[in-house]
Amino acid sequence: MDTQRRGVGIGLLGVTLVLIGGCLGPKGGGIFGGEPTDFAKLDTDSDASVTSGEFATWGEDQGVLDAYMGDIEGEISDSALALGLYDLWDIEGAGLSEAEWNEGLKIWFPDAAAQDFAAWDLNMDGTINRDELVAGIAHGGLVQGWDEDGNQKISTEEAYDRFYDVFDRDGDDALTAAEWRSGLATWNWDF
Image (cartoon, rainbow, N blue to C red; front, side, top):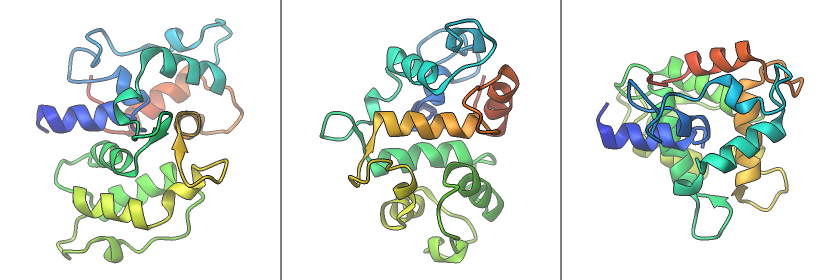
């Protein structure tokens, strides 16, 4: 994975890819020049769990979504979201396989209707490339599940909520260190 592509994907969550991507980067440190963020930095009240509020505050303090905002203050562009997701989901680095795509959709877009891999694989090569994912995200209605206020835009608050949900697998609004580590291990995060 080249440096520019890694920066987009990891920075985006790494909108997803964006939020967590902001704390991670190439092996040896995060994109902010330090070590990958450990759980204790998110757990500001030291109660062994992180709420969605602590998670969003941490993300805002780090500015991890700043590079992915649209022309209007406080909005994330569909294309930036799609590119970040692509880099997170493409574990093998050879385009999204059907397995990678299905797993990504299941975790990142749990409210979305069933999707047909072949319909997204526009060039019919058996993988979904960057352009195909950008087109699918933009036209597939997937982000509607992220749009909590129904204004057809993804705000930073909505993005942080979705990222938090990806990590808080049991949905109890108490992200544990184990859930944090599991979430980091599941996706294409490079330490």
